[in-house]
Length: 265
Image (tube, rainbow, N blue to C red; front, top):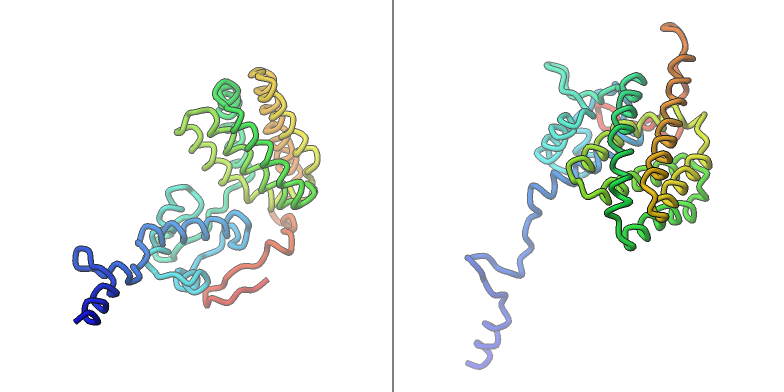
């Protein structure tokens, strides 16, 4: 009798007919979010190249995910402008032109110059520590001299400054615009950008925020984004003719997935 009670007490309790100790399947939304984040990162870092058609089955195999979360992720990425659904052909990675990215930078200048002013007013000491930690962490891991270091720091830094402004809607806009332009740092700026100079510009923005000087911070932010814009303008004006060879893509970024699911370079 005592043994029977012991066995019953050792069984997992049930709640609403479900055994609490039994593993629950992951929620569809969490799987879709995982697919969304992973596919986006593959697009931003040029694993999937602009103009490349994507095969859903191959992506499922690559990410070890089902068709539903991958399909939902691609739909969301279409809304954000990173992919495009072509009728009767499939999903293609949207090939933004340099001109479009320059327009994105123009929009970022208008928004981020104002947001950094608000960050000066609304940022806390903890925010400043986190902002400094973003730059310090990147320098420790990469020495500040690699393209990956710049992209990692630039994305995190601008998202944090925007969040410090207190305007969630504009901060989300900055994040989306920044992600849209990230691929071009790998495609075009990797040969010409002054990575150390860009890192110094980040530090100058931080110092202005720490000094509680909104106008100085605004000038530093404008100079930083303007410098990226000027480099893209230079590339645009010096681009080869229609029949010329396009700029080389770094070898590490040309790896992509084929229709059959096999990766190749």
